[in-house]
Image 1: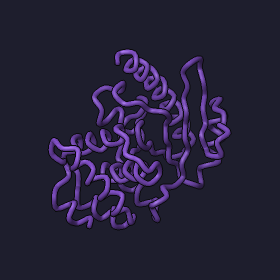
Image 2: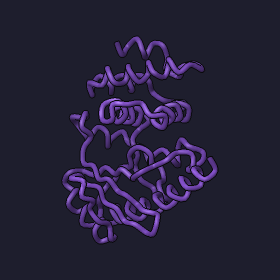
Image 3: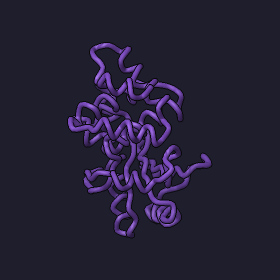
Image 4: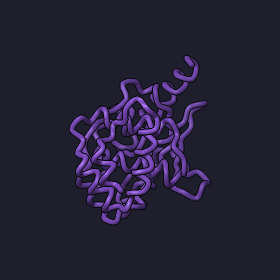
Amino acid sequence: LDKTYYRTLAHNIYQLKGAGEVIRALQESGIPVMVLKGAALLETVYSDIGMRPMADIDLLVSSCNLNKAENILRELSFSLAPTGELHYFKRHGSLFTQIDLHWDIWYVKEIKEVWHSAIKTKVGNVETLILSPEDAIIYIIAHSTVHHGMLRDVWVEDILRLIDHYKSLNWDEVIEKVNNYNMNVPVFYFFSWLKRLGNGSPIPPNVMNRLV
């Protein structure tokens, strides 16, 4: 357990440092950037960045800035991985930083709405944008149930910590966004699974009813 923890901690420290450098370079070039998934959660809802494994850094930029963002990554000595997607990496010995570039969120019709509701925090010691907690919950569930088709412990823990951390979470807004994104089925499935885990579900009963 200790070896796994310290290996995760070392990797996350290195990844977050690299993320900060990339975010700063993008911002200095006039590119707004939003951090998604694990990197957005490690320094907000987790009390210890060694508690959650993180394979890569997911960054959202607007489509009009995509080519410019790729050029900046190359200038920072990142190489494009041969995956057919925009996965950039830079290795230093056994440590590496992987940046996955995104320009949209597949279930969102008007991406500007996501940008509008984003909140500020620090990632890698650099102030940047992350998804609102309402959008973050939906994004993680979509990534888990639709993209991967499974409920891993790490994503369940992400959702539980998001709900616990953001005491002022607007459940009405969650429902509205779920309806707008047509994500009722995946969200209901995920929340139902949380209920079956026991120890009391953090999802208000009226939320479950409104998802049906």
